[in-house]
Length: 252
Image 1 (cartoon, rainbow, N blue to C red):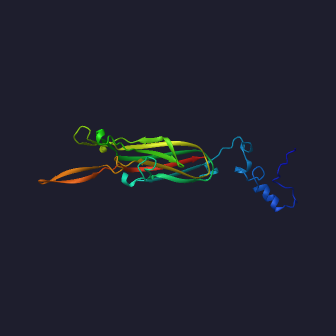
Image 2 (cartoon, rainbow, N blue to C red):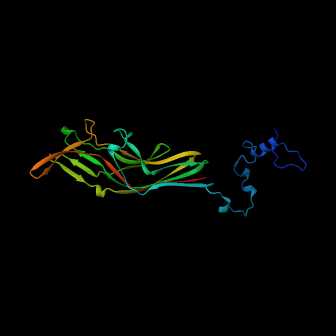
Image 3 (cartoon, rainbow, N blue to C red):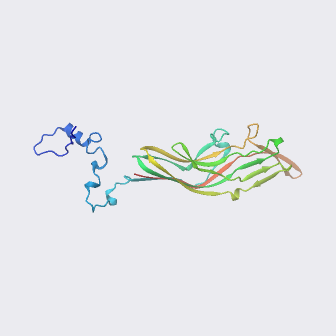
């Protein structure tokens, strides 16, 4: 069948029908002149000397940048994080290192970036098997994009506190002063759909739970004068976040 091309100009004296004219201009894709980007203009409509200048592109028409940040320290303990002992539930979003943004058009690529300073208290409880054996609760960070973990971003944080009774005595070691770390990472996403998206840094922080499902506790005796007083020492994990930010750059 022959192809009928929609007219966009009319001979002098033509009586216009408003509905038909509007359909020619604003109608569905492949019919309306403005139904696609730039009214079907392509490279064949430009002179060979034509070059796109910055003033030809509207703000955020080709690229969009968003960022969120925090410069204040945030410290979180394991007794206030998550809802359980499993790594899948003992996790939370890190304030100041998460961002939700709206993408008004489909984009070819999205560059995701995030940076954070962190200092941790991560426990290792080492005991004889008859006393319950080793306790090594998890403590790591991972980035999620639109609700799914980006697996290559997982960072297992080093042990900084140990409590060792396996040799018969009690030995406690604190390396927190040497465990502070700085991360500056990125990920590239392709074919980003129009709509809302979310980048968030999450921390998995399991509590220090003993075999009886209770927080690991030790009795510590302190001497005051000639007498001793006993105290219950509850062991919790901790993460202290310093300067941090999340950034997104999308490009058409």
